Image 1 (tube, rainbow, N blue to C red):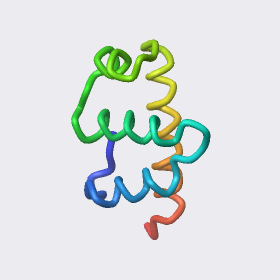
Image 2 (image 1 turned 45 degrees about the horizontal axis):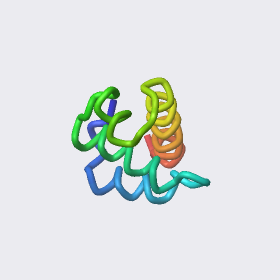
Image 3 (image 1 turned 60 degrees about the vertical axis):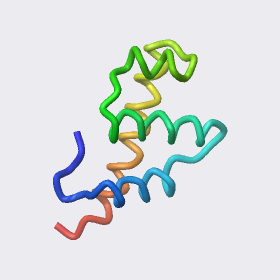
Length: 76
C-alpha cells in the first residue's frame, strides 16, 4: 500500500498538502489512522460515525490523491 521509499514523515506531509476540501480534517484523520495505525474499515467507520462504504471511499480517494502526487514528483 505505502511505497517502501516513503517515510512516515513524508506521507504525513503529503497528507497535509494534498488532502483538502470541506471535510479535510476528518479525511486526514481517517487516512492517518488507516495508514499509520493499520485500523480496519469497520472500527474506523465506528470511530468517525460513518458507514463502512463511506469510510472505504474516503480512504481510497485519499490514497489516490496522496500517491498520485508522489508519483508525479518521483524522479525515477
